[in-house]
Image (cartoon, rainbow, N blue to C red; front, side):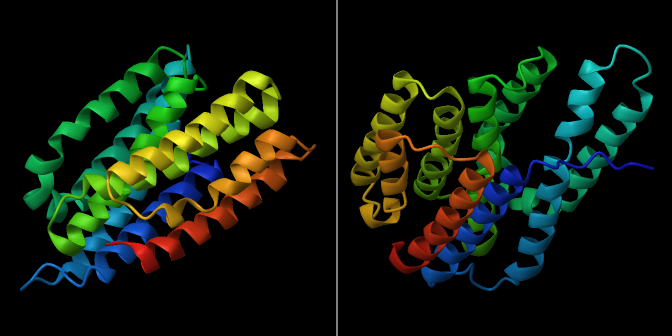
Length: 240
């Protein structure tokens, strides 16, 4: 039996980096939710989110398949229901706070169902869902919703979408978009009072877009992984 798990390692890197950044920010604030054992809820929440991430593959397969779809639908139900059940402890407190983000899930399902899996908007929507794990995990640790943290994580990792397009297309258009995106992220960080030092890894984005040296996508992937680790460390040291 072949389990249709997500094998896009970049997606897992973004997810776990977002989780670790949330843990770093939540624990470094020194305000874990008082009078509550948050560790168990946090672990169940992280596991539940991993199940929901794997919901994507059987859903996409069910949409693409013109013949028998039963197996894909069953796998989608398995991952979806299991994920939601594991999230029950989190949802008991957070469903009202996070219900607005259901729009992201709905829009992603609609885009996938229309065969736009690799469209730019779909990929950005996907990153918005992956990085949503940051405020969710932060909530399980502190009991508070941090849109500031969500913005910080989302802006940082969404740059990877444009970075890959710069490498594939190699056009001046995407190179300019990359540089402008980094500048816009810095402005938003400044407005939200987030340390600009957290965006230090973006220097590589700008330099690579300007110089545009030949590089294999695998190397790009490893570079993004290292930058993600640096980002987590910087969040742990500089978050306030």
